[in-house]
Image (cartoon, rainbow, N blue to C red; front, side, top):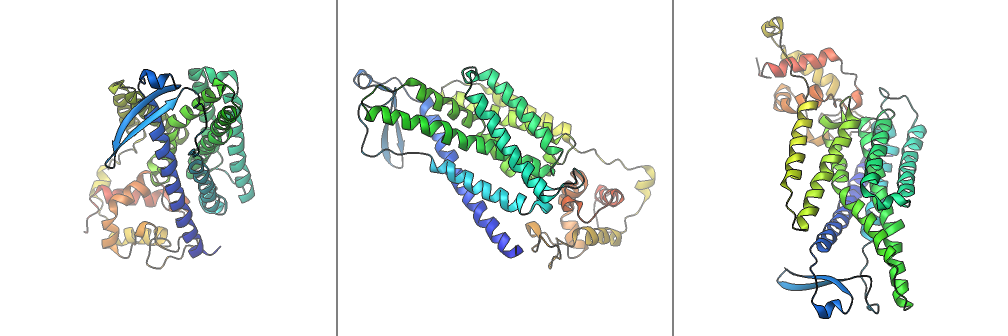
Length: 399
């Protein structure tokens, strides 16, 4: 496919994915907040079957919201559903996954340094991991374990850890992370499709038939909705993780991902508890402290200069030669790379001054995380990285 067309497709699908994701997550956050702020209704509402109500003000007007214990006596003429936000988010997400990691498997998904697999093998493993992951979840959430949240949560976390480790053994680090996100995102959309919407339809059917709704319908939807709530922040992190190789370009990237999932889920737990009026700052402090500890543990080793290196002068022409040879195919005014036909992030190394301008970025992406050159497709050597590290350590100054 023409790279220019691919770039436009990437932009359009990614934009649509972000917009629909905001709509879905925004609605999810709102209804969780709404559910957790309901108050005991007055007697006249209770007699009508109202479980809780609340008042709010927004946009210059007052809103009165009520939630029924099961369902109203009769169905209203207009009933608003919240499902297409979830479905369109999943659809655009899968299209983006396919465009970048399946059609572009050789560039983004396959890392020959990890596993020498073909494009079709990579695609099969990717789709297969999503199907198996979602299938395992559906089996567990439909079992009696759904009534034992802590046990189910522990099993799901261990299962996620196994998937995280396994995927990092066959895919590029980027590809492994994004497929964990794809599994989680499909589980979330599946919770809407397989659990929440069918339960809501069953409630409506019972009301229309004049029957007493089965309370299990609402409880089933509640369990799945709660799961979606706690994995919202983890999936948001995974969506942006490709921009932060300090997390995925590490020998322990699989366990780092699971640690971040725990931390972000804990942050969500803090806000959910806060909705109930329960202040648990220790949860937020613990999450922040854990983040600092994680950052410290995975921090790259500081380059210590030997006495000989301290005396060594830096040849800027050699620095420029390394950057030109290893980075110039992408980061130039006229890139020659077959994938990146426009300089990524607008970073162009045209001369030594522009290279010095981006020295901090070179340190993070080239020296510390070794994320660049992309998939090391230009075969930058360890000796070249060490020379750049020495140049940066000595101030990256023009001498």
